[in-house]
Image 1 (cartoon, rainbow, N blue to C red):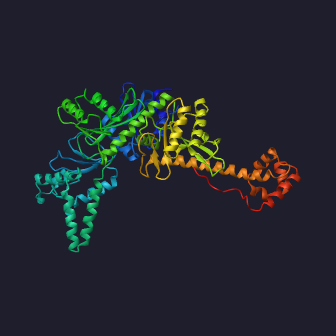
Image 2 (cartoon, rainbow, N blue to C red):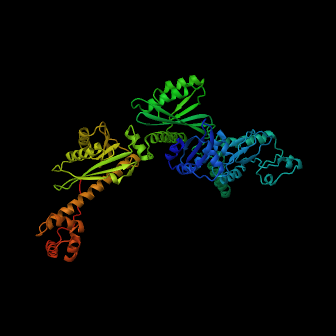
Image 3 (spheres, rainbow, N blue to C red):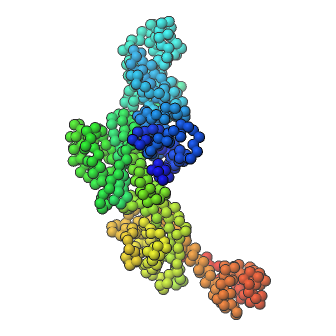
Length: 616
């Protein structure tokens, strides 16, 4: 199997951008997808109908992807990457959905404002991109009430005739083409500069002015004027709504995200130039032992940026590196200017950092999955569990132990399992506890030790995390059982019902927010174990009560009792059946069936199937 096929098999079904590259690493094609898994795999079909696609795939030797939160962000990123790399196979793409820009021809004496989808090196200013072209055009119409800038493409024709268009008469243009307008190039340039300040997000004075006019008109009871100003404020603020992959602040910023599994770590870097993401890098780190993310990040910064004098002005990080001040000083000295190491806590930059972490996790999962021959990907809940519990590897497979008993009646143990956060019912197990007496600690120990015997023998797959329903006592008993039976260490935690705290072996209990995905993943597993155990316990109690009554019937031995239980399952079902039905279904003599009916009729309603609960 080729490298491309291996990478394609492990792609997630999420929005993103994919880049086909040749053997030298040059980008051949950049595309967007609502589902990376489905779109990329369509290129690997053996019978491609499009000759251009066949030619592309004949040169493709590698694949890279960038995950995004939505298809809109994938389109924005695709347009930036296409302009950056200018791939050969993107020129003839017919469904290129580039987003619109505001173009201001600042190189002309009287600049013109327009909307375009093509960015050229012609000296004009391009602002954007914007996601909604209709909204953009409507906004430009409204701001021309404040900035009356021309939009005509045949300006010289109007100028020669010295005759303005309709926009001059309705005060949407100052009329630089008309001699009687008396607007000078300097005055017109001032209006254009103010509009550029607003569109680039650096002019708050205009909004304050519009709000003042709105309040003044309202106080003067000119409600139509106030409503127009209100609508203008709304539209102008909407036009400045940011996109996650596009930032209005200029400058060069590298956004770095890191993730780790055991001794391996991956780093993803989203490179922002001029406020837009223009590319992505992925790097892998291999370390002895299990260093924390701060140490790994410090090593990455020194190895990646110190040899390179072209260091960006700021580097946004997912975690504060070890020796942050020293690293920042060394980078500043290498670049010959100040370099800031940022750990954002809110805003757009934090969302970009989280996107970088997701891309790093994808790169590491992809490499490890291909190495291990595994196609499954880690869910967000599993990755969050790894983070909050400080685990070396994501807990892909988890098992939970729960004990159900009622007084002196026989106790049972339920073991349920999940893989990647999804219940794996084929791995569920239930067992009767052999140890007498309601001793929860001893029963948990027995269940764990008996289960782990099957794990060590290879009959059951080895879990990455063990959860017990209970507190420190149950946790200690389970650890003692694992030390007796397990040959390799395994992460062990408890989940206490009362406060929904995660009980740790070394340290105080961990209390997560109620809406935490990690807590909910453990709760689902614990609740499923409780349900599974109660169901089994109720079945055993019901069978025991039926058996106790049937055993009193002369002529009923173990074989006939088993036949009756198998066919009817409850006292209520047996009482509802006639002697003939019992004899026919359970294959017992009619006389015996009649004795069973007479016996159950004589007991009244005291054994109606057993609906009691259990405690754990």
